[in-house]
Length: 395
Image 1 (cartoon, helix red, strand yellow):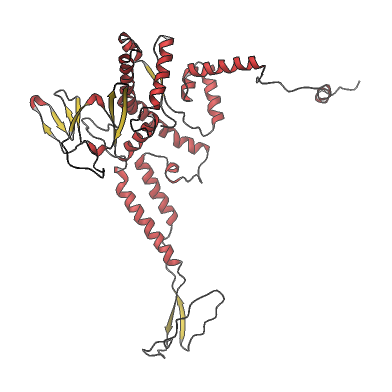
Image 2: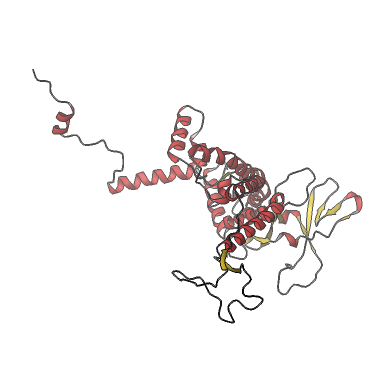
């Protein structure tokens, strides 16, 4: 999610396009009905829930001033409701479908199960247009989401046991303990110290033992090749999560530019697919549709402009680059060769080209008004430096 996914209206009218963009930015600031964050923060929470729980739910709540969003936990959708309805409609795990298999509503518990004042209440039917259900489809006919941690949960538990066992072994090995034995059994069954306090090992101490007694130190053997075994398990966990290993263990000791780029490129492709194939159709596009409807209801937009106003471009947050200079140089070459438009390059940076051009024009106008000049200047060449650079050949 980064700093947030930004919307840029594609309405053909410049004035309407600018007004829609400004009003949507104001909506994003107050989108959270609980007032804890903004729309971009709600997307970040939904992304975390998508990974942990496998799905996230946002409720669209309308009032006289428009609509706002409320984030509810996935367990509020009553999974126990599964039944057939007349005419072929059905409810599966709290999600109601019509005869054509389209989602028409959700059965939601009115109170969270974790609420300190929770009590049993009948689930409430909420139409599907007021529920934003975020989940990553992994198969046809899938109704509810599956946690992304499911493939590695058992292995992660075993890895935790392994770490606990190794930590206990190191702790035992750090205990510098000695055992006094009586080889000749001269002491019999009596206390070898005659009731006196047992000797302790201290730095620089000298301990006198009786005849026939010696000290044997415990030396527990640690598991061999522990580091390599731990790394192998971390690699397996990262593969199960679809992450580059260094994003899981923060270990860059064996990384270089080529390996980092090779690991990040497929990961970024997965992130980009998630942004455009999951977040855009399941949350962003419905939110924009409700925003356009709210503008029409408020009298800020004519109803005949609905279809034109629905055209919107979603600009994703900029991906941090391993070597920004090389990526910028590559983008410049692609623009010069006609393989990429300047709009595409600006969008990859997380900006709208219209806003960027407006800011550049405003900066240039302000610099001219104030008499400022930040253009690159050629180095000053003096007569002495020119003579040094081009010495005269003696006749």
